[in-house]
Length: 475
Image 1 (spheres, rainbow, N blue to C red):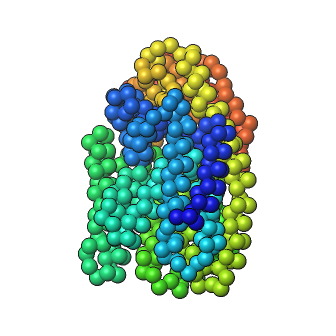
Image 2: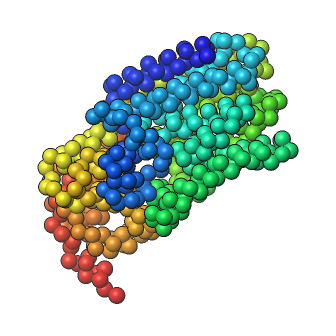
């Protein structure tokens, strides 16, 4: 579609600029998926440590695709390029949907809407984050396009979208039920069925590997979730989406929902709303945390563009209404590009550089205790064993509910070295006799707002402290 050339082209330019100038990922979690993909490439299965099956990756489909594509010695570039290609595909599919649903909108309005999607701050960062966000968006939009055009393969994309991000089962479940209700027939429930089968297969794999129905990430990152997480929506999420925080954009969305006569758009809006709530209530969200948590809401952000288009279709000269919203979107880009650069610098300084330093200085067959299970495992030699203190890639730790329980477990796990952030050092010195070898400092750590000074230490372990071993051995 010719109209898609402009938004796809500008999105590609910004994405390629970020890839060319990027020094790392904005999140260490991207290295986790590459670590699993590396194991698959080397024939060690879906494992963290070699042949050590663990459910520490949240997107099995993303891992499999990463393992299948060539890296040419640059795994970070390969991961980012894959994400960018998915983002470009998502913008193209969105433009096709907008033209089908809103033929009354002119070319300029459609191009502006495509730019609102492609240049949205969250979408831009997600596209080069090394995470499955843009893959999920592409599959999700492709499935909607296929369902809208009654294509049989649409259910395959529904299945794959849930394999990319399991939370989409909520969206597709609501979509299937409401679509069946509107059509007064059962066939639309196949959408919910395809999503459910995908999730059940992943849950079955997790149970087979670990004895639990969900991956370690669910148990680690969903601690203490509850109604408090709802505050994340007005305090953080709304300000990540220009369509929501601009009064004009929010009003157009409301108009679109109120005057909309397309039942598919109504189903889309309701399904998206329940998906947002499900995302909130399955995680402990903190408004001070930036992209690490806002990425959870990015996969379906194109919903807002479609609802915005619905509102614009009821207004006179819609291109004059969409231009201020596009200006608000573009106006946020400089600060977002700066944030991406700062966060990538954080990960390079506190995750990747310590990992590469350990590659050069640690002896073979070392056991290394880490916090942050990504870059260390990816870069360290395969004969080294990596143990994550928060349990993302260690099932027994993932299910522990107190630090005293963790201390006694670690008292049975001898290590040779430890890589710990400053706020954890004192805790783990009560378990191991640690000798500081080197420190990596970051004066402004930009993963939260406001940023703060952060450090990571590499220690040599001189064994488990006798007193902790004695306490834990006592009946």
